[in-house]
Image (cartoon, rainbow, N blue to C red; front, side):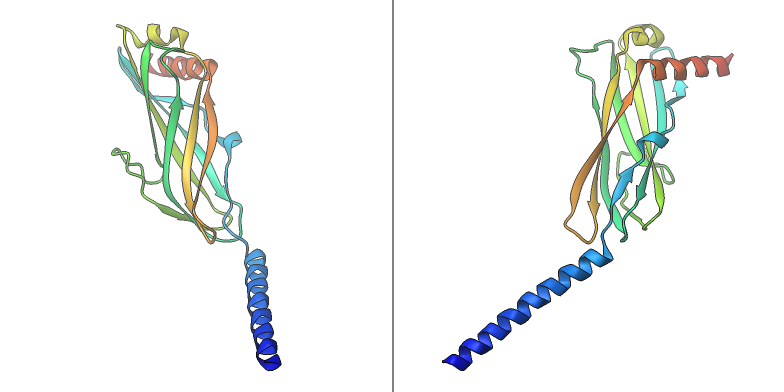
Length: 183
């Protein structure tokens, strides 16, 4: 009986050492760590505009600062502009890969190698409810947006989000620059 107890103790010890070795290697090898680089976001600029709507876009870089590659399996942008706060226009947001833009809101997963950077392309469509989009946007408030993305790497998959803001001033500057270019 003592021999069986010693054998079981050795087996349990080996299993514990195996777990310790596995986690030590996992820590040394690292994992994917994605960082949204909000400070390097391009300002929103007008893509197109007519009397009742305007389309704006910007790019937002995301970098893998980790030691392993990671896959962005899904990504989307969510706009926070309740009608109680602003009811002069309807805002629709789209997010796609800058290098391979898609018009259908389908997210095509991509792998991000360690140390590499990719860009998200964020497109906003603002449709006014009145006769003039410029008049409708006069009272446009600051608008928050969450960029939400799903990451698959060595660890379990997870969702992360990062908030960006379209300020009144940034919208006004984009509209002014567009009107100046058109003249």
